Amino acid sequence: MVSKPDQVVLAPFNPEGHWALLAINAYEDTVFYLDSLRTTSKATTRYVTDTAIAIFHSQKNINKSRKQTLWRTVKCPLQVGSTTCGYYVMKYMREIVNRGSIVISDSVCYISNYFFCTYNNFHEY
Image 1 (tube, one colour):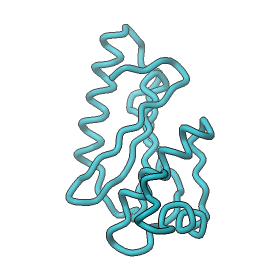
Image 2 (cartoon, rainbow, N blue to C red; image 1 turned 135 degrees about the vertical axis):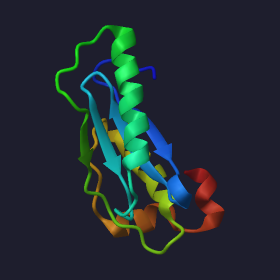
Image 3 (cartoon, rainbow, N blue to C red; image 1 turned 120 degrees about the horizontal axis):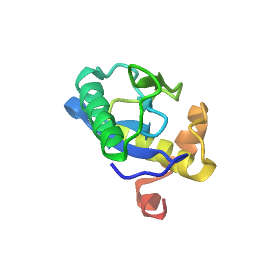
């Protein structure tokens, strides 16, 4: 994992056919979890991510500030339908990069207008 202080690593993942997103700040030992269904089990993902952060701290000689990595579930819009999770993850990543923060717009209309205009125009985004 490569990062700098005050940066997050965006890690989209697909456990069991559903896309979700982790925004990892390894220096602050914090993981932000974004899931448009809010139903995905994060037990395995949590173990792997916590282990990766521990290895990162060891390699960088960083003393952990807490016993366990802080996991924060970010309130984000629920997806409409059962096949749109990938679009939501892309929207979350775009908002994080453009805003420079983990605050995600909770407007479903915004997502609908932004991502689901037409499939023909998708290449513009």
